[in-house]
Image (cartoon, rainbow, N blue to C red; front, top):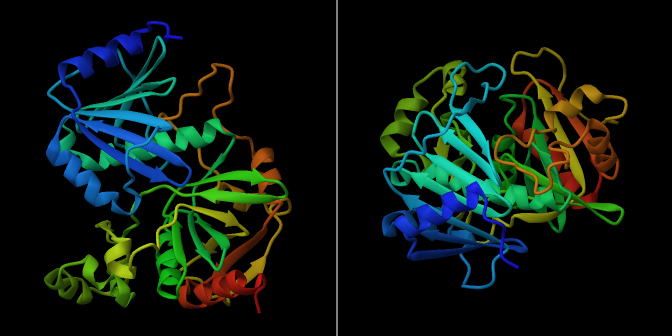
Amino acid sequence: MSEIITERLQLTSEIRHTFPASHQLYLAFGGCTINVGLNSEELNRVLRQYFKPFIAGPTDPQIVITVHEAGRQLNYSYSVKQPDPGKAKIKEEFCDIDGGRIVHKRLTGMQFIFGQGDNLAVGPCLKNPNQVINFINNRFIEWKLQQGAILGHAAGVQHKGRGLALAGFSGMGKSTLALHLMSKGTSFVSNDRLLVNKSGADLLMAGVAKLPRVNPGTVLNNPDLTVTIPEEERRQFAELPLDQLWMLEHKYDVDIDACFGKNRFIIESPMHGLLILNWNRESTDDFSFRTVSLDERPDLLSAFMKSTGLFYLPYQKDTALDASQDEYLEHLRRITVFEASGPVNFDLAALKCLQFLESGKII
């Protein structure tokens, strides 16, 4: 049966006709295959390099996306998305149309149209490949949410078939800890987002195909990351005082294959534990790594909970946009939850995490 002609479908059909996508990219994110059609050969090369661990052969996809390099601006009356807490700059605005939604990136001019599984990006894509990458990953996130997953703000690693999520309040270093664990032999599941589903009495977590972005301090303190920063820049960063080094906002993408070898980015894993980082570089307390109950410590839950945001649009209008606190608690009661507090100590935290991954307990 053909889809009812909606404003969203008319718009995406017109853009695809005007800027045909002749290049095809297939990605396999666990059990989900994504077909990305592009009208730019150069952007196709950029995305193939970024997503190289997940390149797949042509097959029937679960998700179809088209990406159009074009000087095309859509004239709609947008509503502003207010910045997240602690931020002032307005970056996004949106408009809900018949059959879907348009998100407009104010700073770059990129526009994203989606709804009912119809997904399109249009604008100066070559200048903004990271926004295209994020859109592809957001389509996967929406697909998992439609299947009943909850969204977690966490990194994830796996070792010997056991998975551990790493959450933390802002700036706590979950990506840094994940990469410390990679240096000790774990596999990488995700950098910043986890989709968590029930599986009988257990949990499964799925990551997002996004390379970890780290600051120079993380690179200088992990020899496996040396190739991430050019040598001259490393020397300049090494001369900075530690407090300045860790406060730098400059970020670098960590190429998992280049730093740790192939087949170490796995996307899907059983989930056996969750560590919440609640430490402080200036703390004078002793380092602590202990089991906690989120029912008794609901203050920690906000470190893991994540709003679905503008890029999630449920297929049914009456579907809840975000899971409740009770739903998060119901999921996370199935696993062991830890809190790391006191002074920041990545080496000790990594040791405890590895003990849990190898034996199911900490010493």
